[in-house]
Length: 501
Image 1 (tube, rainbow, N blue to C red):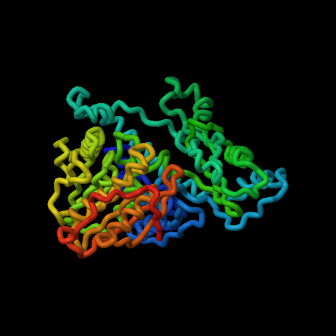
Image 2: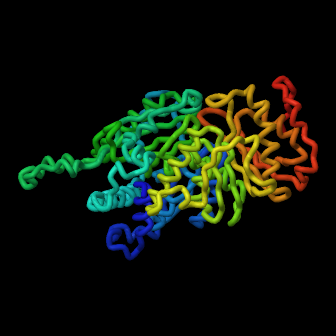
Image 3: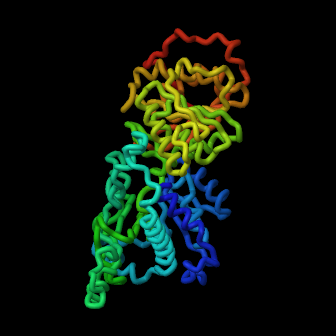
């Protein structure tokens, strides 16, 4: 079981009668506001999941890619189980119309005075509950880690490799920004606070009480995300001055890399939010251990799956699976369906098999063969699928963009062939397809050519590494594929005009 899943299980065990949570029973009935970052374009999908699983109203932020909802501390474990969110944070205070000063000195002075004016109690209590339970689970894991552990030599090759991979340093991902997004958001981190060094305490504790007190001082950093061009200050200056005020207010120690608490300062035009991070790394890393050149985020894969309204016993295929992110995410959330992950690249099929084995190992299934879950990896050709006509209910795939894999020139032949073969294996009248692509011109042209077989129902625009891509929801028409004469030998011209709806 992964560390995240173990932490979630501990959080889920916390109830009002839990003696380990006696310090927080008096405030568990009160609500705290939790924010989450989600894949852009899937905000409404994430909000629907929150309302469905937590039973609370969800607010979608004007700033794309964020949602907010109010929960009690006793449901914190359920929040970590959400499949559509990347990062979680608890809101300290939100300002819908903050009066940013035009003069830089005056604006920075407001940041220096802000920390003492905020109500930190609920947010810090939420962070402390989240943090203490993670430590509790780590201690349990340390005690039992030597029991029934397979030697590396007996593990499958993929498992041994996954076991040897070091975890990324905390906070590393937050400090990097894609070049394509640099103009829209500037993110700068200043040191924040870190945990006490419990494992490095002196052997003579009685004679080193003062040094123990110093080691118990929390370490922190401030991460500033800013959007808007009318601010008189930079993200670095805002994080620096606000971080200094936080340090003076709590007497924490600033540390940019080895911190305990990450304070978030999100500024979007005239809006501002102060929060505390609840996740150390993005939750989209939950299922994939063997990555490829174009690995799809698990949270985005979940959003695509949710668009299909999957029903039990549905047969779902990903004909260009890559690392298997879509079917692996699907089998975790919809175990009543059967998933097939196929690709024409043997390395991709092997990576998918390794990820399936890793998922089985995390679920503590004795049989490590990929037949332990309703999912099969297959090597095939997308234009000649080894499936009976009308045998598939749902098709979900991330199509080649023509950048890292393939080329846009090849897409003019690939996309029409894909839609033809998909229409053959997909069940007429009820079948659905969700296709992700950045090559919109080629896709719309291919879709217009196969318009008698597929009907476009909905389009979701997403941001993938700075690329503006589309997720297209298609419905299979009732027209029988075998009764139609398709223009299979007539190639599409890249210069042909394509009209997009």
